[in-house]
Image (cartoon, rainbow over all chains, first blue to last red):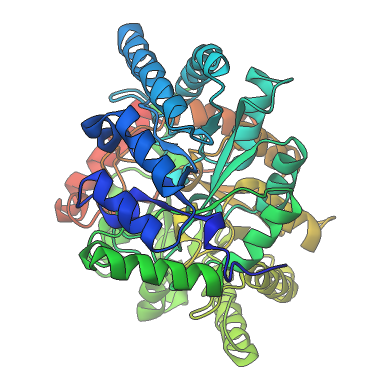
Length: 283
Length: 283
């Protein structure tokens, strides 16, 4: 397998990696100047400037949007709440289309506050995705379901494995892999005993729409904001990218790293330089 | 399905629930006086008093040992390290036999420090269990593999789902369900999309040796020591016990709750009373 050496054009930076410390236009300049080919911006950043202006800057900098972050939750206590989320996501899909994003990243939501109905929450997710898919098809923006680590099942996502996400895709859009697929983030999935088979299955189904990297730190201090820089943790990133490529994935490798107490304190250009170095040496 | 009302004789307390604040003999008195039928003590407590003395007290109090906690890790950087762990576990099996424990609970270990070889760690676990099984058979003490939540895959256990544990059992002891099975702790497994099938499979295979309860708090603050009291979290405990019984499990329901900042500050008798009340009302 080829390393990513001299292939930063195939690599993207999720803007959360930089800690959202600067306006998006500044961030995009930095990412392009560091040599990356792609970026994954977040809604609040894009909406602060306006999608059209962001799209112009992206074209000028020749940056591809590896994914647009991200859906609001599809689970909710009331039908009105869930409908409001669908409407908000439809709005985001229009922006994703304007940015020519490779996909719209779906973080589907956890069990609703006060509820213990996990199966019900999973049904809400299925219904919500089906509703969004009609609009996604019109706009030609693929929906990428991102399975989150099981430690987020209560609050952020009731979709927790690639196998589960794939089953959802096949249920909702059996004949249409191009518009509904999966964003695989290795931080969320590295532990999965079925990971190798699941990546192969997702590849065969042509459902892999994105690949995110960071690392799992052996002494993780915080469940949300303590991801590790690639190479600093326990994940064999080279091995898993190999599996992704064997499964036919030839899209971008996106760094998505939440690290409040470590990397978000590092100056942005320096942080991007570390990302570039680690992508080329350990991913 | 019957509730656990008036059936505390079918319920057990894992001594970690009380925070290991008192010597084991005091703890056993409290648990028996509160009406529970079982207890799951930890090695360090038993070894402090001696297994024979503990066994005498258990008989006098008519307490069953629902499980003996727990194996040292089977993963390790060197063969010598792994051998030392096997030897230590064999010692513990002798104590488990003296205590007439229903099973010896196996927490198998994570990826070794400095390693990224998850598959290799899983092979070490398979080898270690196979080695221990010979001794377990001689002593007639069943080994119960406990799948831990995926957030512990790096440091504590590379066995993270019931399905994975069951596959291990079938590989290591295909014809002998009585000596190698699974301890199902709902805190670790509640999120699993394959949970219902896995419990049913494990039941059909006659591999379910223990069932542990606590609850997953929506706002979990600590990855190790912030489990919730049954009823305070997002897990539909009644539903899952129903599934356990449908799968043929008729053993004890054991409370195992690590809660440094909340329940370990409550006076032991009061805490046992809350456990009893919640077991009978929500489990």
